Amino acid sequence: MKHKPTLAALALAVALAASSTTQAQPLPTAAPESAGFSSQRLANIDAFFRDEIERKRVPGAVVAIARQGKLVYFKAFGMADAARSQPMQTDTIFQLASMTKIQVAVGALALTEQGRLPLQEKLSDYFPAFGTMQVGLPGTDGRFTMEAQKRPILIHDLFRHTSGIPYGGRPDGSNPVAALWPSGSAAQNLGTPAEFISTITKLPLVYQPGTVFEYGLSFEVLGAVVEKITGKTLGGYLTDTVWKPLKMTDATFRPTPAQLARVARPFPNNPLDGKSQNISALERTPSFDCGGGCAFATMGDYIRFGQMLVNGGSLEGVQVLSPAFVQLMTSNHLGASILNRVASIEPHRDGYGFGLGVAVRVQPGLAAVPGNPGEFSWNGANGTGFFCDPKEQLVVAFGTAAPGELRKYYREQVQNLVYGALSR
Image 1 (cartoon, helix red, strand yellow):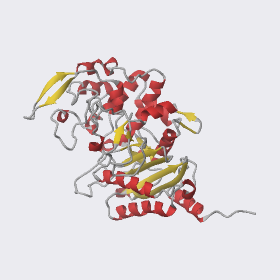
Image 2 (cartoon, rainbow, N blue to C red; image 1 turned 45 degrees about the vertical axis):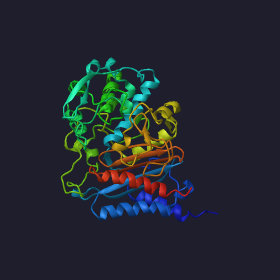
Image 3 (cartoon, rainbow, N blue to C red; image 1 turned 180 degrees about the vertical axis):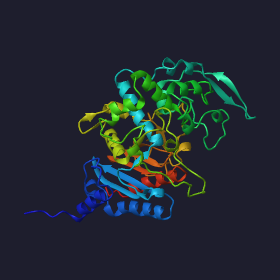
């Protein structure tokens, strides 16, 4: 006797197939209820993005959710490129911005596993000019004085953003030392990695190494270290170490013309204030494989990457990191002696510390979003987001082309909507 498929299973099959006929599903699929989700509550995600699109606040979105190793939700909404009337698909490619950093962290930790990149090694052992940098001390008159480093910048500092290396052009603009530094988009076009290093090592650090979480260009520097160790471009190394083993088929620093045609693009003007907006890596090809923000990938690629981390470093029999190193990466590395400014970068992230390339939740309260201690995450300035909750065996990746302030709203709302759809 043949069994008829359930309505839930049929609905899932339709939802997963409706948005794309060109890409296989990135993970095995399951009906939401079998993995502890409510289909009815997952529909709140559909309603949310359809409303945002109808109000012309965002062109479109892709959301991927996996639990217990199974893909339970994978949908595309709206347009990938409204100017060309190009529909969003589940295989649309996104400019990942800072979600690049997490992949670089995994690639760099693979070298640490091999004894090739100790975390306590001095950065000046790779690039001596970092050893001569001084620290700028702002005064009350907008000027600053200089003092020597009290201890060297360590590789560990690059991973956890405690190097004293900032981003220039941050919104508050209150630190005259940070104002001397290039923004992330400007840094992408400072020539070769060696030329980038030569430029920034002439500037003062904003804090003493190892004292303050200061979000900045640390991962661009870490990427240059990886290139020096391996003798490969950062993209070539990540292809060999992370992307190809995990079958992340569209992950790249250098999209082909065919891939560029599939990249999500924002509205030309910010819907909140009408000012022009763009994705800098699409306007001008970065001059080097910048580890802080220059990679591209689909959300299907990224859900596979996240599943590997929740699995303890392996996926489908391929081990990328050991479980011990995944645990090290996703543990809080901001001790009591380090000023934690994570919530000043991500406003809903009170109650989070920072690990090696990811924010890490350290308590259930304080944050403006639900989650469990041990949840780890990071997002991208162009509208992408990613989080994993090992306790719930949950992986979420979503993409929008929203480089303005709306991106922060979507980060918070997607987390609310996903946890709100859990039934057990």
